Length: 207
Image 1 (cartoon, one colour):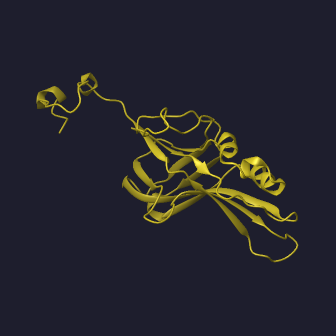
Image 2 (tube, rainbow, N blue to C red; image 1 turned 90 degrees about the horizontal axis):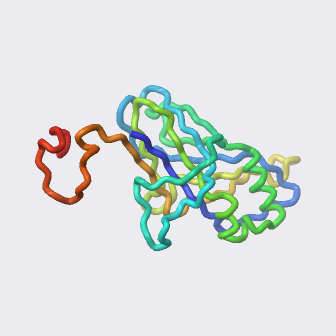
Image 3 (tube, rainbow, N blue to C red; image 1 turned 180 degrees about the horizontal axis):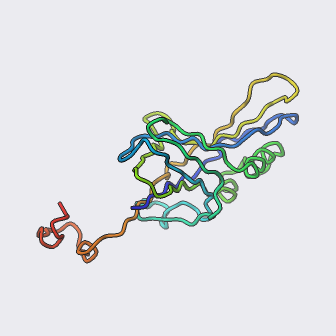
């Protein structure tokens, strides 16, 4: 079984850091919702940059768990952690992307003032797990807020002791997971849906 998390992002209202401000870091925060299997051993996640718009073919249509979108094979960041010890992860991403976003904000570039320009620049992030002995579920949204977001940290005045500032890019509602698996025989021969099926047709593996 293979699973990937697709996270399209929204630029929000944009932000304009002071001219003297300096970039610090860019991170992706993920909230762990549940886990099955061996949760006391290290698990590794790779965060990739999407190169294809994460959206359905039909603007009004849904996204399905079988849908998949292309991404850059070189990860922006990697995190190895022990699931039972972590309620949330904050994975540091490539500073080249963080600086692009920060400088665009300082210069008033359209990618941080226009939704279409932003989506064209950053089509989304893709979370890919290395093969492991556990199944993890990350929550995209709680009842009243996002549980996953992209965070850009900076300081307004590096010469003083001012607190670190943070700008958050929230996930778009079409954030979803793609889950694929190889079906063993005889399940790979099944083509009908929503119909009665004899136990013998599934080799006693269906229910």
